[in-house]
Amino acid sequence: QVQLVESGGGLVQAGGSLRLSCAVSGRTFTRYVMGWFRQAPGNEREFVAAINWSGGSTYYADSVKGRFTISRDNIKNTVSLQMNGLKPEDSAVYYCAAAVGLAGLSKSEYRYNYWGQGTQVTVSS
Image (tube, rainbow, N blue to C red; front, side, top):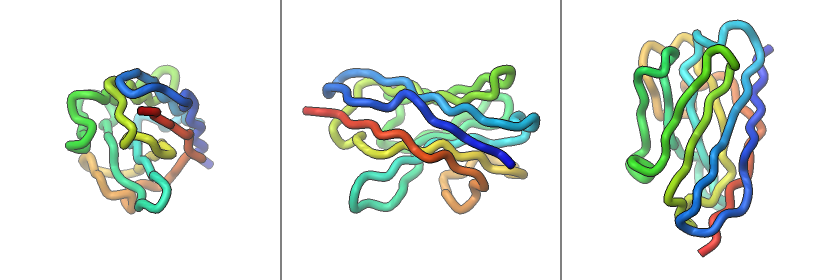
C-alpha cells in the first residue's frame, strides 16, 4: 500500500513563500509520476504541477507558472512544491498525488492512483 503524507502548509501573507513536502512510502517511488493538486472551498480540485520519474520534466498550471516549482528527491522518496509570490487566490487544501504507469505528465486527477490527506495553505491579503 502506497501512502502519501503532505506537510508544510500554513498561513502566509500575500507575496510570501511556502514549501510543501510529500513523503511517499514504498520502494517503487521512481515509477511514479508525481503531482500536486489543490481545492478551495466550493471549487473543484484543480491541477497545480506534475513531475516525471527523473525530475527532468515538469508541467505547471498557467496560474502558477513562474511562481511555483515542483521537485523530487528519489533517494528520500519525497516531492516538494516551492511556492513563491503567493496570492490570496492560492488559498486551498493542497494534495500530493502519485500516478502509476503513466507514460507522460498529466493534469487529470483521474490519472492519479494514490493521494495524500491534504495540507491547508491560507494566503492573507
